[in-house]
Length: 455
Image 1 (tube, rainbow, N blue to C red):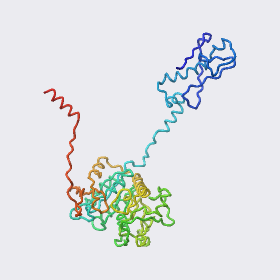
Image 2 (tube, one colour):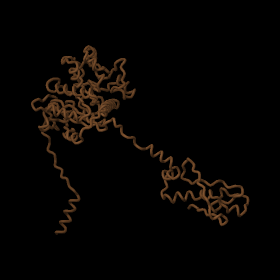
Image 3 (spheres, one colour):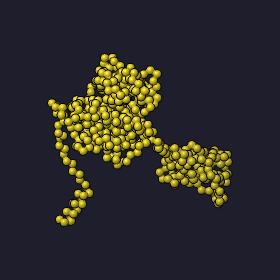
Image 4 (cartoon, rainbow, N blue to C red):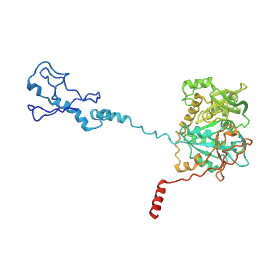
């Protein structure tokens, strides 16, 4: 119990209290009263204290007299307790140090979002001809697919995906480009025909948007780099053959090349060093371009800056990473998405460092997409997201993809390939799915009560 102090009968009835001085250090214990003077041997709270008991006697008048500050010191702790039954450090601080609490609270407030950034970026991924599972082009059915690893790659950095169907009408393709904040060109095999023309059309649109002042990034992977090389060079025969299928490799940075403003800018220094010594990136291609041939083509050398090179199994050097000088366009001959999201090829690196490479590349691309100020209709985005299509497991096909979304032109039905026959490369029919009956417990209770009343 806390003893309450009362003035002695000799104390004046009217006391003008003085505001106690509060220390800046917070304590849950009430401030101690000042030490007794030489003529005060009794405690101020009406009972003896062994700690402060004096061995000398004092006069009755001096032992019963209390100053106003001493009374307030005695009442300070009961006052705090009366204001809050559950006294906590935070509550005590709010009573004792309100100015400091207000400053502390304001420092915890979240800063306002940067109006120059788009925190809901959407990426368009161009589909590739074929069913994806068999590893063959399938022009007979007009089927196209997007490997799910590219979707997961984009989503891992905080963006959503709208599929761009390569053979849909151009007006629909252009409408979808107005819904996204960047475009990803995937790996694959198609280097001619309608697919080539679609990539060329989209690339020209990307450059037009940036020339008009809209920040609109693009990332090209493997086949994507090869197609951009052919389109920009205006030479469909510029590619060379390399032996780099199912091969993990290093990246060798070009001399006198700064990484500031490039995809490698945010990489930790130790990871950058490991890229040059450890096989942390996945190569899976038979074509590419050598640094010499790229530099010899004026269109390419004026558009792309070579960041890294790699070596194939025959020790031939090829360009592995480029970035445009004047556009937010980055291209890899290697596959950044596979380290974290693909398991079909035996040599894909899955170490912690390799997965960090995947994440840093994804973060860079989506950070570029956030700079796009395109703000499309929310409903139109929802109507076109890849979530409107069912993913398909095709890992048993052994073609390098574990999962994919398979698409047809919008007027046709999507082809699903959840099961692969062991002796066939074609898709078998999806297994019948059990129906799930949605039951409302409240509805059951109402029906039961109705039955009880009638029964």
